[in-house]
Length: 155
Length: 446
Image (cartoon, rainbow over all chains, first blue to last red; front, side):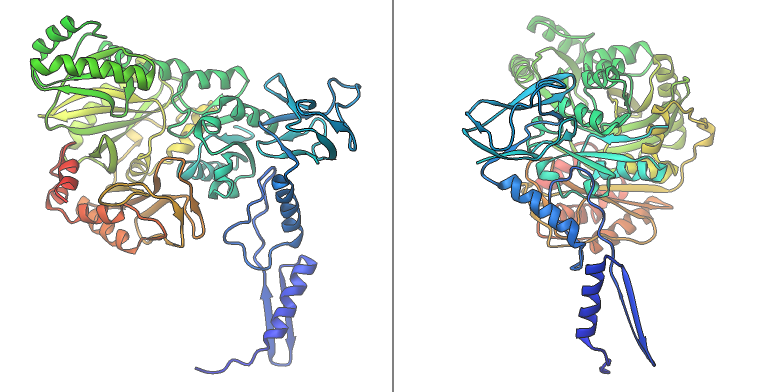
């Protein structure tokens, strides 16, 4: 087999540049030598998707998308995470203009209403599964949530 | 035309619908359970919404979650696929009540055909030939005896709320009727919440032949010929063919005329399939499925039609744009349902697909949501792929099917591909010489 004269380190360096810059193709030429590195763009993650990495994704996946997905996944498995039990629209206050049910830093009792999810004209009270302190509020009022989506973190 | 379609299903049919929507330029919403977050159609859809945990009852059968998902994504139509909520008339009504379009038949026909007694009565009044049976429900044992004596044994006691091969008990002689009667009613009550039953004559060597129809909202009805789905195990279809080896074009045309005329008078809309038992040259209606069927691809190959696209077009209010004389039948198609089951024991298995290579080439189509690295979840129906071949003649199609099965690699789970491989080499199958009892004998013989 003929030895093909190429430098694997250069190729790795080019691949890293693609990842860092978000470009999809780089070609470097010098005299008679030419290296071209092409990255297939990862299929864009659709809205609301649970964080499952695409099975066939090439190694040089967009770092940004992975970071977001990883962060969401972290929270979904966080022991204090309150996950949405349904599909609907989140409301953080009992009605427009009223005080929100809770705020970050607030201590809550088990069973205390944290927020509402409206599904098909029915407002469902989402209650704290345990007592603790609200450390994060992840859903914004008026935005849609899917089943299993982290809404708040109670530590 | 719709601005956004929500696909209320999973697996290969969700992918099928996704593909038709993509070709029509219509954005899609894939709803999925947590177990299906990595499904191929979810990855390809424009948006996705997780609607529940793995259990179908809390996800794909969860009408509130599905409607909620449609509302929050702004979808204006829902395609229900097959199974799940596709023949749930209440769901179809709720979709309409929320100002969305249900891509399928009218709720009244879904309801009517879901009640097997009402379906038979409707077909009888429309001139469609039936399997000889009771006139409607049979409410006591004495009446059952009278009906059975009139029909002649063996007879079947069938659940009105059944269908798809479920809820049937056979009585071979008068002394076994009482037990069949009681068990059928008890099982019907347990399975369907309704113990209404009717009687039918048992046919001992019929073929299962069904007719594909499409109807638009302007009263135009066409048929796309028949499918022979006689190869069944425990009333589940394994392999289907378009056309039937037993039917001549003239017989197809004659049946087609009776059916399209009946459905036109019924005012039916969208896709549907009428199922018949065919024995001694006679057709006998058993039931109508008011939805797209699993085996629709064989019809698509022979008639060169995209049935999902037609469903969407019809639901959007478009006219068919063609009539029966525009439909022609070319060649022969065969579909194998590949399930994640042991090819001999039929024990289901789930797991990770380590390697996947689908066959290709002229006249080969694979409808499957599998891919290398995909984990087949254990919570749902075991069908993982449909292998469809099309060729100019039945003999060529069988040859092509053999070649395609030999190329098909699904590594990581057991599938029924080896069983299909054996069927393809069987002389009876090659001669087209089979009835609905054939496959049970074939697998029983080992």
